[in-house]
Length: 485
Image (cartoon, rainbow, N blue to C red; front, side, top):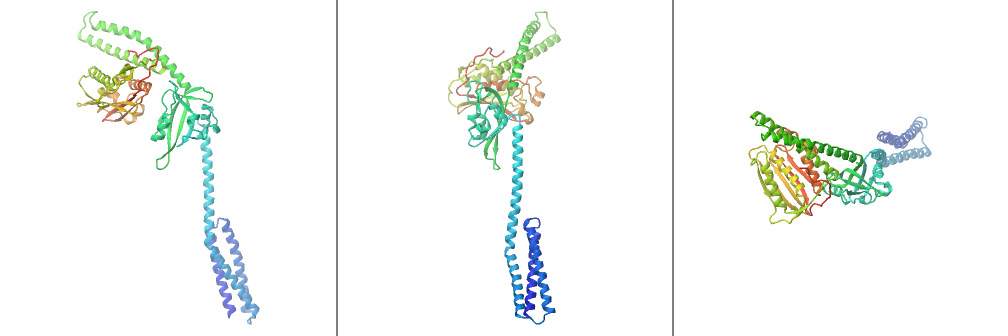
């Protein structure tokens, strides 16, 4: 009786062991552990079959059981218990090992994919035709592509880990002063910044080449700036093309001035009645010719001035002036010369007390202020037109703002507003006259003065143009020509 109980209990335990092995196999069937479970399952099944054969033999052929047979039954029984206990204890352990093995395999695959992406990114970066380098918060170079190496003359091993301004020395064309402000502004403000015009890169051998482009911040998910990416390119060829265009424009403009001046004289001769009295229709025709001729003369003058600025041939002759008094004069001139005098009210605000004098070229700065004030008056098409001119003294700069409540600048046109010959679409509809050169010229003058110009605008509500002038004033510059009248 005892033998039968032991055999049946052992068979039940072995059946339970088979169930455990099968459950493990289903959980981890596609791994090495899964294949090991199949082997254990097979061995357990063999053990079970042998056990059952022994059980049948005991019951059928040997009704009388000896002590040895009882001992063998006990061995089989405790063997079954041992198998079940071992499998049960290691069940969770095997599953944990399998889970870790799966995670490790997944991590390895992700790592391989990331490395593949990294190598692809490096290959793409080295294939870019512009110089690219990346710096961290400590301003040290952490990435340096082939074109950056070619333009600077420094190899990757020389550049990586070094402060960027030790390797890539950006300087102003005029004076050779370090020009790293665009990188500093990018790191501190977290915005894309552009190199100032006329920036040079000093190569390893001391040669200087003109470069241009921008810096963009690298941020984490929280928006914190971790570094920045600087892209730059050699613009020697485009600078040469621009110089050729400027020279062509200069020559063509000079050639146009002579016949235009002659036309102006003859038109005035006709308008004054020196060639005989004109009837009303004839007088209207002559006045139309006179206005068109004046616009052509102004266009030629603008082209000449831009050509002189771009080629560096324009003289800068600073004088010590009282800035607030100078601005008042410009406001009076703009108001009296407006197409509809008295149309708009110009309010001027300034800091309390008298400001110190500043060295400025009055002709150039007058050109900037006149352009901004004329635009504010011209595009203010409402009955209660109000224009505000505000002078502020800031840290090392004077900031001047011209605000109007006019038509504003469409968002789609704002990026191009300082381009040559560009006019916003709503401005062209409101006022047909205009060359699109005024703001471009103003920007060049302010940058020559060492300042910045920008604007804030909303279509239909108005615009504010700002520009800054260094408190130290403008530096004199020798040149062949002054502004063309």
